[in-house]
Amino acid sequence: MIFPKEVEIIEVGPRDGLQNESVFVPTKMKKELVRKLSKMGVRRIETASFVHPKAVPQMADAVELATFSNELGIDYIALTPNMRALARAIDCNVPQIAVFVGATETFNQRNIRSSIADSLGECTLVFKKAKACNMKIRAYVSMGFSCPYEGTVAYEQVARVVRHFVNIGADEISIGDTNGKANPRIVYERFSRMKHDFPETQFIAHFHDTNQFAYANVLAALQAGITKFDSSIAGLGGCPFSPGATGNVSTEGLVKLFHEMNIETGMDEKAMMDAANFAKGLLQQLTSS
Amino acid sequence: MIFPKEVEIIEVGPRDGLQNESVFVPTKMKKELVRKLSKMGVRRIETASFVHPKAVPQMADAVELATFSNELGIDYIALTPNMRALARAIDCNVPQIAVFVGATETFNQRNIRSSIADSLGECTLVFKKAKACNMKIRAYVSMGFSCPYEGTVAYEQVARVVRHFVNIGADEISIGDTNGKANPRIVYERFSRMKHDFPETQFIAHFHDTNQFAYANVLAALQAGITKFDSSIAGLGGCPFSPGATGNVSTEGLVKLFHEMNIETGMDEKAMMDAANFAKGLLQQLTSS
Image (cartoon, rainbow over all chains, first blue to last red; front, side):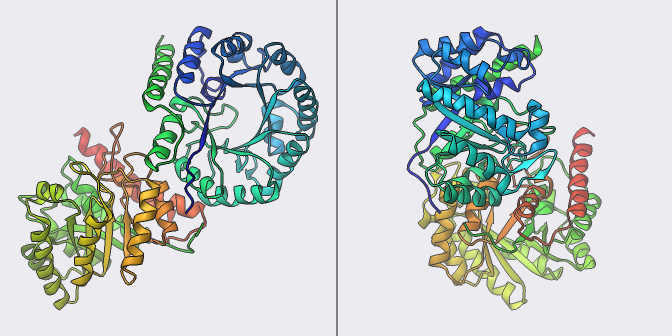
């Protein structure tokens, strides 16, 4: 087995996590969460979404969070799946944007009422403009292994989305087990093939712990040469559009796994637990009030 | 990565599992559990312990369970860590016995008030007599990776117990992460080295899911060439109803993992879930009464 010396963990709790929680988290609390996360040694944090507030009210405070992230001086990511969202992100001097497209037609239609082709077309425009503004670009492929509507997702379904992202210049591509149904074999085989077919591309593994296989999937991804992982503090979030799917893999669980395997993450465990406890307390407080 | 075509799962719920539950399970219910387990396609079940009833009252009905297991015609394992226990097992025509020794002096002393050397000495006598009676012999090494009293357990501490077991003729050796602190790296490295140093020996991996790393550890053991795994139906032995429960990896979780990876277990999922639900209901009933 291959064990890398170090990995990068990308914290997605404030955006991917909170967006998928049923309670609304006040901006002040989100800022405090981001502030705590910025102290734990993570290199990048997904802090905001510029998706229209009508579509995702939870993320209506994108400008405030981006401004706050700028003030903190952190490297952060904001979701900008279309040109309108991108325009707002540009106004906020966001350093890295993210877009997402589903690997299956059914999911993409249900998630954002758009065909994969149309979504990728919009991404082409977004990438062009973002590049002109010197923004870094992250691209998510949702349902990268399995889909709640279509079942097992074939390699080629994912590859065609990846191919488009690569061709239009994504800096990195995060393959999501959005449905939480992946197993170590498909993870190993899929990432190995991805890296073979797209040797210049930076891939990230994004796991959900629905079946408690997330850590085994992480190990399988490591064996395929993946060294970048998305995770969410306290396991915040899931995916409301994916029935039965709960839970991003937690940052603290992932860090514990890596540290016990003597793999460096650059994370400070004490600061991380402080952020995790804050995130848990925040949800408890909001749920009970 | 290496994915074997098939694995063997050894069900340890009725003995290792129930022994570690706080509630006393009546013999009639244990028999029903064993009967259900015998239908799920598992090749071997650990059903009884001949440890003195004063030491482990939960297992006082060993004779009845062994007799019942004989009637069912199943291949089963019974714990016989000393000559008195073995004598009772011989009277019951037990096909396979099991002994256990801790890898650390402190644990062995606290667990059975005996030094490792004395325990191994007793095992030598037990093995000799059991072999004369054509019994198969399983040997457990407890705390095979980490110890609650001594911390990380060195390879040589485990190897010296294994070496003794091999020399006196164990048919198989189960290395237990009794403390639930193993990680995929130590699992891979330890089992790889064990298989190198004891090439003729049949090793079994016995994981606890304390840190939620059990499935990752299973994957690591698979990569080291281990194809036999102990597990416990419904995770018995870890009180599945209390939050933060720690205990044996569950049979149904392990089977789900393997089946989703297209690795054969010979297990019938429907019969297995029937047994798992029975086990859960049994504990719920006994806990609430």
